[in-house]
Length: 280
Length: 332
Image 1 (tube, each protein chain N blue to C red):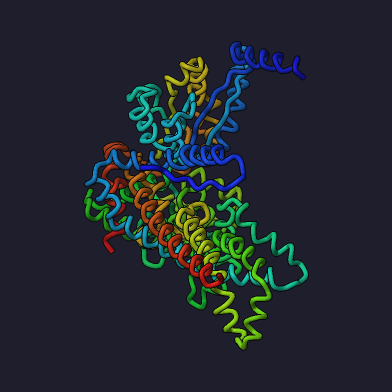
Image 2 (cartoon, rainbow over the protein chains, first blue to last red):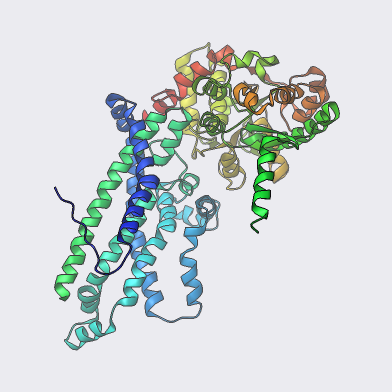
């Protein structure tokens, strides 16, 4: 079998770039990840299955995947609106808002978790008004979602923004002049162009939410079977010196998230190709 | 520039080879001992300088007891460990084999120079009249305690409740289990560590009673004001024994065996005991205990060996995978 490399015409440096990428991925990603798999393998199939199928762990997976999914969906909607506002309109303080979007990247997540908890706890600034309405945010699954939206939002905004920036006004104008209504222009002309970027943002926010620990443990309340996230159970397993069990939970999460990200990438690829064929 | 580099290299090399300057000691400890060891380290450094003429610099590392133990197993260079429960030092002895498994017999009092217990922190005036463990399981009382799966302190609280129930109900295991199940039904939030629970109770205003380390309860009073909370002593609780040990192989490698031993022994001296008492740890020394009697009300304290047959057994039965704690939550 012969391997085919696609070489870009005249630009030099293909081999150094290629080798560097492979080396980097091996050292930083593949070796640590394979260590997780190897550690899991030391446990034996029965123990792995017993660990990842125990009711408490399954409940934690449900909380983790459910909250991350809800948070990623919410981030896509809110993030799109923010990106739209930042790119389409001029308003005072715009550059400050633009910079604020990135704050969750820089803030230690524990700080985010603690401040959100203080806000939404039954005695907190917002919590005290929500409590009488029967809305429980802190120490409930909703709180986990709120924390994950905070963490995931910048990923969506920053993925969509450049695409919005590049979108040609001419296309919109052409659509309008051909008789499309405003909603039609948005839905049939603009939206398909943003779709791949929105999917990227969604995938990033979702993946980030799955792994998030620092902010969630403060706001979730950590009640077994109700608001325990999978990463917390990994810590609990380590506390019992059950390294293999911890690795087993991690492996199950890795496999599930890898499959989901792969699926999103495929959908995204389709959607991009669809756009390209349509435009050309 | 070129001439400077070899000089720097040479001086670096010599400083590595002929380590002059102070002797360095790393004490790997758990969360609530921060203030205790700050005071104690200063006192010991002074004592050691006076005795041997050598400066000693003690570095502290704090974190959850289990997490700290894992760091040492994974290679953190601790000369001494001062952790929250014997189980965590047992793990170092078993898994890393850098100290003998009979480490706990090497120093007096099970190698625990100071003890603590689990007490109740309630809101001022004790509006829910919580005086005893049996009050904490009443309907309508909200109890704050961390998750025993992730917090050493929470395991002491759990065992204190279990032990109380056993001793008040003819050692009936089923009744103790029902008691503890009721207790955890009253817990709205399980933080991952003791400080987190203190914040939930004191700052977020959640819950009617916090099951707390005695010293943490005193710290909370100091920090948030004695006009907001009060400490309630139940009639009985568990004697929490946070043990200390020299990590033989690491100390030998660093050449710090002698000073590390002296460091731990100093905890047992009058001055060491006084420092512990001032930081709200119960001293072992009777003279010092008498002096600080006002800080430490008398209550019946049972040990984990008496009631549970030691940490290994308690851990396996209650906190292991599928253990009693898991069952309590999965039974719903």
